[in-house]
Length: 306
Image (cartoon, rainbow, N blue to C red; front, side):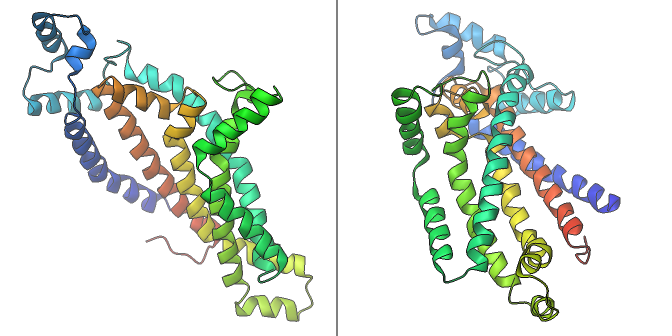
């Protein structure tokens, strides 16, 4: 296991280099002049050029790239052009908010998705199956921004139960968590249903039933564990998606997470922040994929890690 993990970690290095290189050059293709944004609209051309020199944007692109790589090797993500603060500080402040929203959303959506999926799968072709999948398809089909505005109108404007914006406590998490989690729960439910249906066809399930085991024990003790192997992949990918931040949802609720920070950085042409955020998003997916692969072996010891 340790050797496999080490080999996978080393294998991520070329991927990270490609991501870093692509992002570095891609963000410089975004229309707009960062020096002008920093200097201000009323600044003279001479002031803009002075800012450009100060930021190092007057250097050739390959020189800027080498400097950026050197900073990364030292753990320096640079300073934000928008706030003049270290990017690491900006990301850390927003990351806590994103982590709280992600944790709550993934918790309830996974539980709901798995329960609906198992309920539909073990009752395939019955009313329970049609009900569960109707709910799931509805969750996938409803646009998040529409769901968000609908929740705001109902629970914030009409009933005045919950706040509409910001991040200050558990109540601030409820509406954006529901908005984000509906589609995720639906996706997990559909994958769980398909996995349960496939597993229930296996010979060992028929053997368990022939031994006289109760249907509940057959479903949860024998079928559920093996069905979860493919579902773990979906949950892991959704976890990475949530950590990356949902741009639409965070915009609707003015939630100060990584997604909203990315929007602000793009609007300001904040190169250091954009590069760092996309690098962090990529690194998260790489780590999550590694954890998912290891969980395969935990769920099913017969799986060999190659």
